[in-house]
Length: 409
Image 1 (cartoon, rainbow, N blue to C red):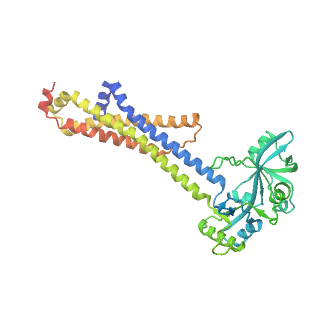
Image 2 (image 1 turned 30 degrees about the vertical axis):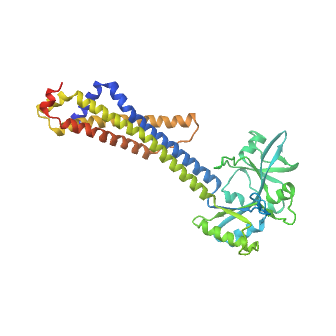
Image 3 (image 1 turned 60 degrees about the vertical axis):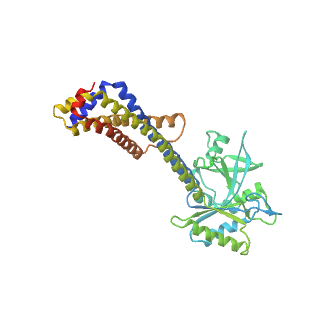
């Protein structure tokens, strides 16, 4: 019986092809929009997670604090309060810490042959690569011996290497920073942009001791001063608890009294990233909710057309009832027609959504990620819209009086 109703519904829809197509259009747009918008949101979340992973996991960043003079506070890092010894103490005395790296960076011009490029020069201790989860693509890393001897060796990021050497291998080549020659010993694996949009591969890394002695200059009275300590905590350890231990250790080392403020700042980047991810997820839900309005509009269109169809086919309904059709049969017939409209629109909408997602990726160069769940939800929603929208017209048709229906002009 259900198969016969489906065939009858298909015949009824073919009678008014243009009207059926226009009725399905709202469902097509709604389903396609939901799939495309969820794909855009999922792509944004995936891109954010890639950026978070590129920064390194389980990190705590300790920076120098600001100075205060006459009630005026200068910018972050204007008070040089951290030293290499602080980094060593953090790694040595706090069990939750896997590694702690001291860094000092500044933007400088780098010269290689007849090429030059302004890039970020980072003086770093050997633990830096482990902390950031950064691997060497070619060559070797900077070692503890390089740091102890203040060797004039350098690692280059992919962007800096391309700008200075083109497609040639930079290994063994010489670069000059402030007229000081450094030998390139390694090329860093590509990291891409960070969440702030900065190119992490546009960098040159040298031993911190070399940077301090030959590039940045010593700070009077603070021979081993640094600006940043990046701490990596073991997997499974509590970042908040580790941060508390680091704060207590540094306050003790800096001889700060209980009433004194910290002369350093601790930041947990994962908190910021989590808030960004939550905001991205909320935006995805909002886009899907806006797109679902098209489905509701499509449902109203189906209901309107089915009501018109009931009016146009009143005599047919009366005739069917006169030859023995029950109210349930009439209800099923019109309900199947409404659901058929919605399902065909849903199938076309899935195709439109998949095509739209690929078009967004191709033309807008925006990463998208198709979620099977979004397709299932959108298609199921379309079927539900068909059932709900067709129920009232079907019930109206089923409740017609056969005699009155036969007399209808």
